[in-house]
Image 1 (tube, rainbow, N blue to C red):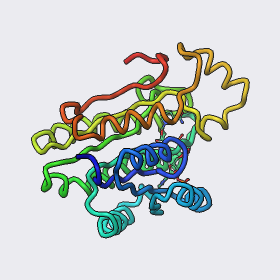
Image 2: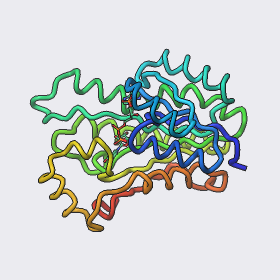
Image 3: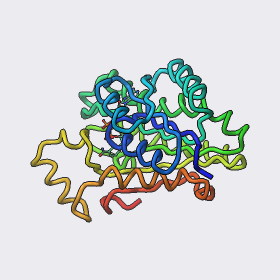
Length: 242
Ligand code: NDP
């Protein structure tokens, strides 16, 4: 029954999001992959996968509205929403600028309002919806230099629980996936000696793979996952048990 449903994956052309887009497509969904500015990566992704790509800034409410109207016209109403787009602007709080704070809150948290607000009425009318928010282990336990990022990610958790309660009677589920360190460009940018120490601190002794996260998204997106809502699935190799 999941076959043919339309899924929007924000930040869906690179890293974790790209793998989510691919695995949802392989599972039979019609996928729209959003991205923010890296046209070259998006065009390469589109050519390799055949997945439709849509460029818009998830932190811009009006741009999100216009893009979701376009996706609906192109593919149909969005029934699966994966809020995955995210950035880091790390700095300890005593050095953090307002711009660093604001960029992360707008892109990682307000974005979830922007996208979800635009699809929720349609989901309620059709009596079906799956919303999956990609948060982070660092939102669960905090991290030096990431007060902005951890605040946005843990804020998403409260958002998830509230919208889960509101949508429950309408067959709309809302869940979080909280990855630990996952092998993407974001993490490969960390100096090798630091990365070595990070991996040593992960009980399963490896980074997460993008597939580890994507297969959980596909699981939660399914029609059969209707009894799972308001929850957080931690995928972190045992590094933080929450
Ligand atoms: P990447 O940096 O590899 O990819 C980020 C994606 O988000 C890109 O497609 C990017 O678009 C898009 N994006 C960024 N800003 C915007 C914006 N304003 N509007 C639209 N799209 C935007 O990130 P990851 O794959 O590593 O991370 C994906 C998610 O997982 C994030 O929310 C991150 O916080 C979370 N996460 C990642 C972990 C990790 O270890 N990698 C650990 C825990 C959580 P473009 O290509 O145009 O730049």
